[in-house]
Amino acid sequence: MDKITLSRPDDWHLHVRDGDVLKNVIPDTARRFARAIIMPNLKPPVTTVTQALAYRERILAAIPDDCQFEPLMTLYLTDNTSAKEIQLAASNAHVHAVKYYPAGATTNSDSGVSDIKYTYTALEKMEQTGLPLLVHGEVTDPNVDIFDREAVFIESVLEPLLKRFPNLRLVLEHITTAHAVDFVKSMASNVAATITPHHLLMNRNDIFKGGINPHHYCLPILKREAHRTALIEAAISGNPKFFLGTDSAPHSQASKESSCGCAGIYSAHAAIELYAEAFEQANALDKLEAFASFFGPDFYRLPRNTDSITLRRKSWDVPTELPFGNETLIPLRAGQTVAWHLDK
Ligand code: DOR
Ligand code: ZN
Image (cartoon, rainbow, N blue to C red; front, top):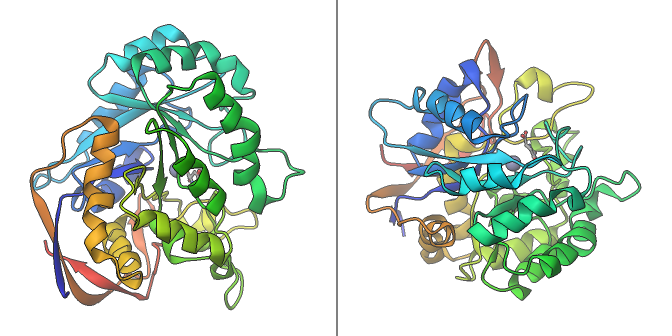
C-alpha cells in the first residue's frame, strides 16, 4: 500500500500553550486533525469554564483561514474544583473533559491534586453527568522509580478510584506500559486510553542513543521495548478502548536543552504520518483509521468526521528546527525523515 485515505482523524490529547506560539503550533494540528482535546496546564492553569472559553477564543484566532478545526476544551482539576463548576462544564458545548494531574507529576502540575480524596465531590458530579476524567497516571512519590510510576499509580490510585466511582468515564492518558494496557482492557467500556506516536515508535534506549537526547524526554518517560510492543498490540487490536492522542507538547529549544530540561515531545508537525509508520511496521495499516478517527469520537460521544485525508508513502525531511514565538522548537525527527506524507 503506497497510499491510504482515512476519515479525518482527531487528536484526543494535545498541548498548544498560549500567546504568540499558538500561531506557530496550531496550524500543524489543524492541517491534520478536525478536532483536538486541549490540555489545560497553562500558567496559571485553566480551572474554570470562563477561562476555558477565553482560551478557546485565543486558539480559534490562530487557526489558518483554509482549515476547519475545533478545539475541545478541558478544565484542570484542583483540590478546590467545585461540583458547581463541574455542572457548568458538563452543560457547556465547548468543554469536553476534566484533566487530573497529580500535583508535581509533570510540566505545570503544581496546582494539581494533592490527594484524590479532595476531589470526590467533583468526581461524583462527573460520574453523574458523564463528563470524562482524563488522567495523568503517575505517582509523584520520589521514592518510586520513575519507570514504575505508572504501574504504581494504577494499583494505588486508579483501582481504588474506579471502585469508588465505577461509572466514572475515564481516559488513562498517554499509556506507556503493559500494565496500563492490561488494566484498561480489564475494565468496562467507561475506561479507555490514549497512546502517543512517540511511545509507539521509541523505547527508553532512544533517550540515550549516542549520548543524552533531551528531545526524547517526556512524561511518562519512554519505557523498555516489551512495553512498547504491548502498546503496539493494543493500538492495532481493534479494541475501541485504545485511541489516538499525540500528547504533542512543545517547549522552546532552550528549555529542553538545559541543565534541567522540560518534559515534552513535539510531534504535531508529523503526527498522523508518524502513527502511519508505527502501524505499517506492525503490518496493520488497515487498523489505523479506527484508532485515529473512530474510537475517539465514539468514546467522547461526538460524531465521527465526514471528510478525509490522504497519506502517501513518500519520505520527507523534517526541518531541523521550527519557529516558536521569538525562540525555536525542535520537532520529533528533526533533521531526519518521515516515511509517510500528507496530501495538502
Ligand atoms: O512530557 C510531557 N509534557 N508530559 C506531560 O504530562 C506534560 C507535557 C507538557 O505539558 O509539556
Ligand atoms: Zn500531556
